[in-house]
Length: 275
Image 1 (cartoon, rainbow, N blue to C red):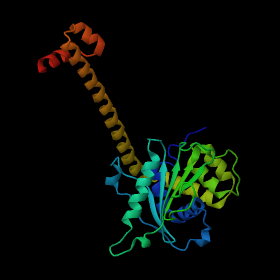
Image 2 (image 1 turned 180 degrees about the vertical axis):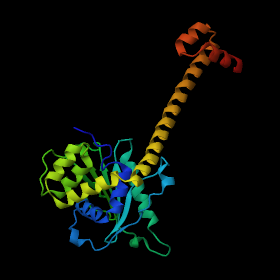
Image 3 (image 1 turned 60 degrees about the horizontal axis):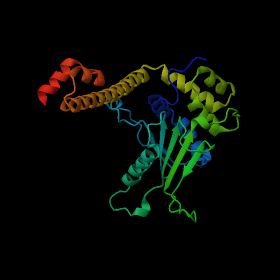
Image 4 (image 1 turned 45 degrees about the horizontal axis):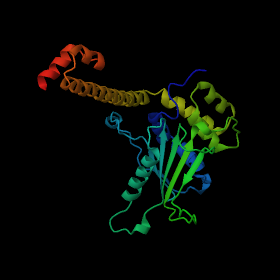
């Protein structure tokens, strides 16, 4: 199987494709929220921009923020489990919800705010690939407010057998696809919207605009990885220095300190001078 260089999970591709093809985004969001497409009368992308200077920022989020029938909807794609993901999602929700209150408005006028996460790792100990959270009273299960909604779609839990009739699973299978063969199998089902999405995928990935944005994004990923590596390396080096200092205070032989810490004779001598 030939692996795809870019997938629907690639954040630059995800953002660029669905901003340039908003009708595809509208159909995707309708399935993720379980809404009839024809019921969506108001649909607006609030953050269509993807400035090149931001792509080089490792903290740049390439989410898609929308207004859907008066609701705030934030769509996120997360490839790797970096820990504390539910807390991050709640933070994203809180930021979107609180920033929607305009001067002079009452709290009751805050819009329903929903965060949708498509994640490529297992987050919850259950067999279901879709989990939906709202604030409920723990014994009576009474809903506190419907203005908070958190959807999680776990790609590793998707079933292998997917039919043409299940549009939600077809959309999620596009995001799960890592090989050309997987995309081709979906295309062979001859579902019009899937064919449109795959055609849009190839159009975007072959464009020079996308390649430049992905180059900047990849540089940011590399810089972040290098920074983390250097931080870990410096931390380990400092641990060695601390051990060496303790051994020197105990008047241990230099040869023994070199053997126990892996430091060079010159490094130990510099530490001795500074003590």
